Length: 474
Image (cartoon, rainbow, N blue to C red; front, top):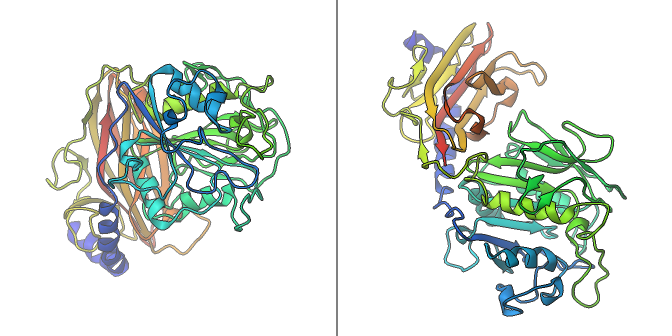
């Protein structure tokens, strides 16, 4: 079986395998040291290096940078710090649980700067108006992948405050779709090219959600005053969730506020900058006090989301833990380098065949790829301790000889216990390995089977290649 399998595959996958050696190496370079998770102090970096003060905007917590405490070391009101985001900053500072800084230069990760992302738990991007460089996008995405929180705040399409041809919609979409870490819809949503003039988007009903029901209050509505929404794509990231929706919308369209995960990190999106505007700021700017708008609960939404992104009140990237969990990686033989051990797999699935390259090491799990009707499986039972947040992740490469752009002939289904996390097909073929990540915290306190099931049709091969799996709890 294995010999036949390799022979058939080599004709259609040898060139792809050669390309993967380069791709895998590039991905390894990006995995720098993870940011330390928040303990007693949650470290938040507000970006001001991408024209956040251009035009009529003033998206800063203080004119004192990088340290707002230099303006006032013990602020009691929003006017003690100068900036349209001063209410946000002062509210966090007054808790005594946050350390806040402002970045005014290029964003880095793994460097020596005091505002290097490795020194923070959360990065806030409040309506950036210049494109991030290639190096910055790598830094941001790697920061999130390794456990950081990312708060992306957009504005309506066409809000080009510095007249450079780019607005926040384009800039944030570019970050998600044109980076060296994962450009295949890593967060599971795209920002819509819309200019919605007004409204009070409503929160969904979810009493257990930490963003909607957190330490800073209960969220009922937000404010939209020339903003946009997002389209959710749970097939790309099952953890994406819309929390606040434009009137008349639900499900995967019209999400005004959404959350997701990537790797070990968390992501939040807000479709307008008006809700974070506190009406104060530097002279010459005409601002609107959305922070205190009586028709919305914007302050609670911003502050709860900041806490959630930093892991405050929960135990990290997956959410749902109670702080009693010991951090660990639970899967055995996670990179398959021990060969056919620990996992239960169809014959020939765990292999070091040279026809498909491993992402790291020599071995990987290779499901299907015969060009004949085949079902391959790969599974491992794992016990997830009670009180833990849990995140399942793996790298997936799909190559195919199918030529259709509309029909899923060959499919890979990923399940955890009785829950289907995702289904991929020949339509998802790509040139390299892509990181996939899922919150499986709901399985805490149980023994669940993580299973990959590949089903291939009778002609034209599709290979589903998996490597570097992990089930991290914290």
